Amino acid sequence: MNKYYLEKAAGILSTPLYYSQLHLLTKPIYGGMGHILMFHRVLPVSEKLRIHNHKSLEISPDRLEGIIEFFKKRNYDFISLDDLVALKNSPSKKSERKFVVFTFDDGYVDNYLYAYPIFRKYHVPFTIYVATNLPDSTATLWWYLLEDIVVKRTSLRVDVEGTEMTFRTETVKEKEMVFNKIRNWLAVADEKSLSTLLSSLFRGSEDEIAAKTKELSLTWQQIQELSQDSLVTIGSHTVNHFPLNSLTAEKSTYEILESKKIIESQIAREVKHFCYPLGSYGTKEIEILGKTSYATATTIKMANIFAENLQHPLALPRIMINTLTTDKILSLQVNGFLPALRNKFKRVVI
Ligand SMILES: [Zn+2]
Image 1: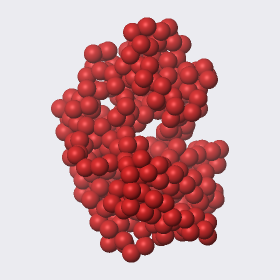
Image 2: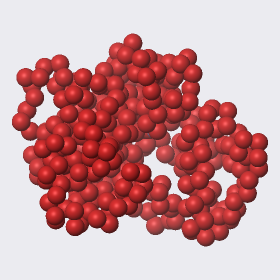
Image 3: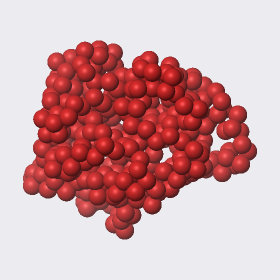
Image 4: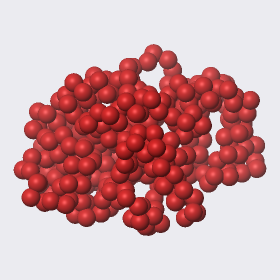
């Protein structure tokens, strides 16, 4: 089932599904031994006009506490990615209790400002996967810049593979539609079409690009401070956040190894955990990672973790948390009901 419709349907049906207790039937088969959760941003709710699909990658600090409470109430073990690797290496350590791992993608400053104090309060470990061009201030955070210009402007001109196209962005509906269309192009574009598209979109806004990156990214100083805390794991999310599947083996290797080197030189610790940008990976990336000292890599496939997944630590599925993830939806996810539908009743997803 298409992910978008699955989420929509889950939202509408979550209450009847939850009370029907049907999801408790899937729990023994699809619930798994634990879950890796995927977050992006944690920040207070803003009043300004936002693009819905985009805003969905953010949750409020209160909601983050609510999610921690959800797992506390259910008696979960809160573990780090290193603990997960230890489970693989010494199965005797496996507890009767389920585990949950918290992970954050990209390296946003709000992870430090709003999420970190909450994890400290509850003493819960978490991982931040950093794309090094965020703290290096060389990233083009096009997904936020695109939102800004779509919200601000009444029309937009872009160059898609040599063809100039103009879109009306007057109403909220038009803004949503155009944002989603362009975002979908950008997400799968190869390096060359990405740069043509971006330069046509952001021509003349070079200062804004740099300012936006600085405004949203963690600094190296904050990353260093976080890395000193035993609750925090700093992982790699490449240098440039390109979809790795669209790159040559040589470029993929660079993204995977160079980011590790850069972060290690900044935090003076080994970086052992990786996350594929946009969930884009193939056998090429698994092979490259297999030759390095990375111990795990996470994807954006939606599934719970089973013992079999620990034998394939370079393609670990996760459960995405966004504004739509109420406690009822979270129950349907961790009990395996939604992953079973999403994966056509396949249990172990690699
Ligand atoms: Zn990312």
